[in-house]
Length: 224
Image: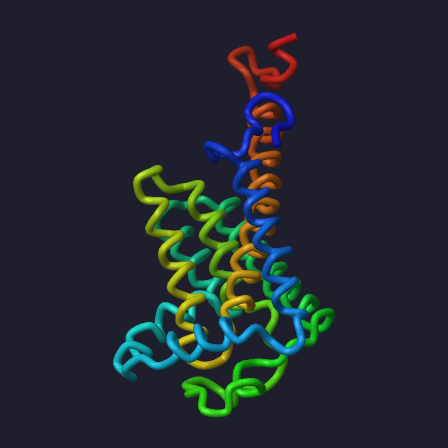
């Protein structure tokens, strides 16, 4: 996943990350289309959903980072603290592409949300109606985490991944998604996040190549 000098994705094993996400996406899809739904998935949903309300309340603010507003909030923070307009724009655009892309996947799979399969599920946000696979919140959180991670030290990247993970778990806790929805969302978001990051690296590389060299000529020409 490289294209010329200076355009390498800023991850140690991007192909492995993309391959793992693709496997997870396909696997979650195969679970999502099963009818009836696997009992293990339903049982796991009930177990995660059956937590104290205080836990759900604590997760609610984190869950909002996966909403349609989440990428805008993160992008503004990046502008305020890092002054990196390209990174901020990539976070926002990738987040929006992921959000609407997830809606398209929902229409293709047409799987319901937990109340359609678990009568006693506790729905803590909205009505629990509509289509579930994939989880848009989980997808957006994962995509934003991938792009944001490019500006973080390696030791801080697990924190971004952890926040994205909590967003997905919160969706199950709030009774609006099943585990396969969340796993599919994470996988989809990782792939779109890698795509957004790749575009960003290409733009940075072109900007570097076009910048004036020591003699006032573009750096790319100076190397020839």
